[in-house]
Image 1: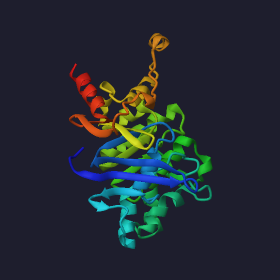
Image 2 (image 1 turned 60 degrees about the vertical axis):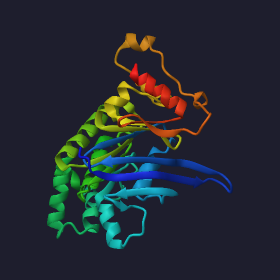
Image 3 (image 1 turned 120 degrees about the vertical axis):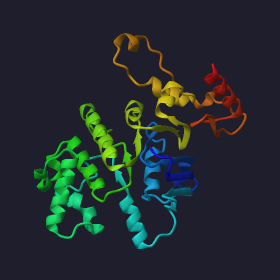
Amino acid sequence: MSEEKLLEVTNLKQHFKTGRHSVVKAIDGISFDIYKGETFGLVGESGCGKSTTGRTIIRLYDATDGDVKFNGVDVHGKKSKSDLKMFNRKMQMIFQDPYASLNPRMTVKEIISEGLDIHGLVKDDKARTQRVHDLLETVGLNKEHANRYPHEFSGGQRQRIGIARALAVDPEFIIADEPISALDVSIQAQVVNLLKQLQKEKGLTYLFIAHDLSMVKYISDRIAVMYFGKIVELADSDELYKNPLHPYTKSLLSAIPLPDPDYERNRVRTSYDPADHDTSEVPEFREVRPKHWVLCTTKEFDAYKKQLAE
């Protein structure tokens, strides 16, 4: 991981109107940076806004407010067709549902080569076929799979096809939106290992969105924990696991099962109640120790500092 910022998110907001006078604040002023070559994990329970964050970054949604910069260029600013085309090539997405994200009427070759044709990356059908075959082998499938349809594959194989489609245009940055949540547990590790291998080979940068903290720790360099549209804690992966500070982070970690029946039998899990927070002031995102940030009030900040010093 380099010290060069690839993505800068500043005070990003995404609000949806749900009626005449009601608004859902799916993202409510979050900020973070992602560095070239790293995997940035974004975790939280369903409905916290993590998938909306990924979709807003890649311009599937227009941001309500805030800035997103990719390689120093404003993502949501006005772009010419050529600039937008280049942006779409450099940033790709792997979707959560490998069943719904592949067109059932297209062959695997057509699915993967769609991006190649849009961006003019192959000169003829022979080169297109060879590129598709190479991509299939890269993700652990066979070239014979190219002429089959999505329904002929298992969930894990379909997700590999989705990964091949994302890789086809040689992106710098991939948003993986819960790419393993719809897969069997036995297949999840295979897909995550594939993503790690591809990152090493191609120098990719990932935003890895998930609700499973144990899997996020395995793949991520840094992790941000999201709760109801806000990031409540952000730290290096090991630091977050060793020294969780925010009560919500602690509750997520306490829910991870361990392969020890005796330990699990006597284990006390932590629940999170927002009402337990200090309400004397509006919480701010503060750096409790280098690279470890927590959303907290001044009183909570002092308590966290004391906790880390013990």
